Image (tube, rainbow, N blue to C red; front, side):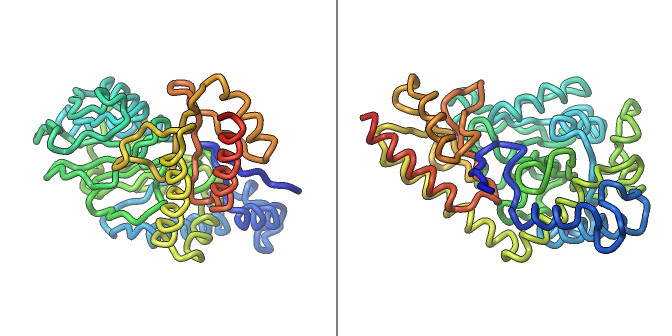
Length: 360
């Protein structure tokens, strides 16, 4: 069997040891005589998986005791509605900072449930840079301030933590959670789809401070009400059991590798290999402001877009897939999440060098 280097923005590549363990346990999880897929979510077997997965997540991220961890469904797009349904009722309005397509979509969805103030926008730079905090126009009476910590399409990432005063900071961390250390206590709420760094699609992690529970709008469905989900330990409805199990295996794997500090060093090393080449190349280019470059998603363009298809075909033949950029921006994009080995990035750069020489 030959595994490809999968540069997909999500669902993304998973650690091979995790996949092998899941395969080994597919028919019989730890002597239970059944697959995790077949377990009752209220049975003792799955309850132990659930508890261990939450415990590992809390340990790796350093989640304080006054925060609830919820295992939900609907992805980050679902949370674009679920967040305001739960929080915007605290004042009827919220601040949103636009740094790309995903934060733009978040703001648009939230406007259905309250007043949205665009506190800052990177549109003038074509979303190739994050607006400096000095440009932000925050409302001190807002229910929360929303950011997207890493934009998968444009390839911009916060490398600094916004100061929102007493207003809770809410972050969509779908594409960089678990990739580096963070101070959870500086956020009111963090949400993230699992399919980049944590596991398969179908699971959404929500980490919410206790004082932000209990403010849901009357129209909020009970299954999306954070307080109800917290009271039921994410078991108000059937949770995505198999995705939680895989996430737990990923968390075990990350812990064995040295935790988030090790992941951060690993990701910085990979990104440097690719960015260093892009910076020295006259054939390939990256448009993002250097201070805001993502360590997770690296967009790049060829000097001649007419060569895009040939580049992609050659990459696939060399065992590298999912390098086509998002349709909104074109070009290429290499997503290099936690599970992408440095050998994958080195192989990509070697191929790019060869392609550049052949097409000068």
